[in-house]
Image 1 (cartoon, rainbow, N blue to C red):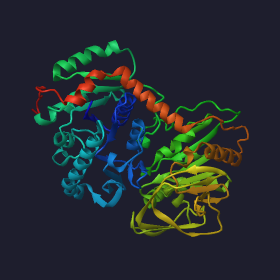
Image 2 (cartoon, rainbow, N blue to C red):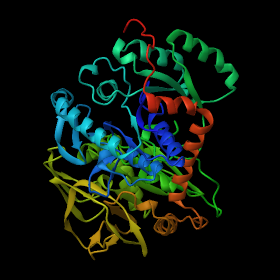
Image 3 (tube, rainbow, N blue to C red):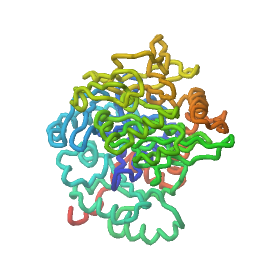
Image 4 (cartoon, rainbow, N blue to C red):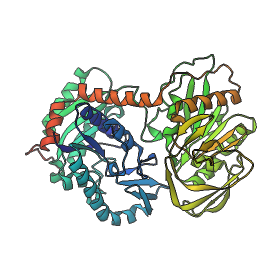
Length: 506
């Protein structure tokens, strides 16, 4: 089998990323050399590749589904929103400046060439490339300059599957409308539909599937069931449960729970850093947005941010800043990661990201941070809590003055990274908590600081294995619930000829 396929979605979070990961896993199990590809991603949840670039984390997970190391080729354009109007533009892993929505349009012609050249290289190297669209393909106000959805499909002659989330309601209208609002040439590449997150008796759905086929001339190639285990590596923090709970907390090994409050910053980045904690029995992890939720927390986590100074100002406006300082003053543990670590500092100087100049941090760690134009992108190794650990760094802010505070991590080159200030810890390392032994040591430390003597970390949680198990489950769902023969044909032969074009787009 040789070819490519684009998975588009009726909305953001419809299931594109997980379906691509599942298709990649399913194909890789058959011995197919397969790679993922997302021409343009807009996300602050990113990852550093082994070739020293930055891509969307979803593409790193999809690479893992293929049995590949992450590469900048899998996500050639990454937009990292710093506000509602501007984003940092990362091309082939490297930041190339900031752009507004309007100014970015002017760059798209050049970026399309980068996208097509990169995709062509992957198609020459791999038997199959499974592409993921961005948002919805029917953003008709953006279609003229599109490089991620139908613009890519047309330029590379890709058959398109459209996935819709039935759990949100209105899935048939979403699927029909997505097709009907496209012009006739775009509609010709929409080859079928997939319904995601179905709960209930499939027989109840069957009449709707038949009517959609009659109306559009396209089949629903599969109905993927809702599986509550599928929560790791969420594309953004809004993908978690409505009550903010991360994962499916298992009962504690000991006699007490450890309650973790993670501040959901407006420009939160790499929210997935806390997922490893949520895999631990007896650890309840919840995203919070107002100070009362910190009142009974044992551990407070300040995660990464794409806009550190602006999010720090938000902490102060909401009262969360005072609540965090009060939590620390009571000797209870606080962990700051990347931007969250920078917020804990005495002073922040930022002429790069926010342009705010010098501002006061929360003052919980005696360090000063200054933002530099050159972004740090690294995959360091070291020791934390006496245990070997790896991580990855993505930040402009750097510690330029360190008071009498030891580092949290001893990097392999002997330097100190991060900081320990009593019950307050800070680090620039993302992924630190994915190291099993280091995570267990951290949890023991946090429980002791919080007075949770009855909490015991489990001895056998393997986070890497949990991620692989989830990818295997996605591959199983594709194999069991999709018409895989039809998917094979689409990949090899492209979209069928003569597909019906619907008004008003026709």
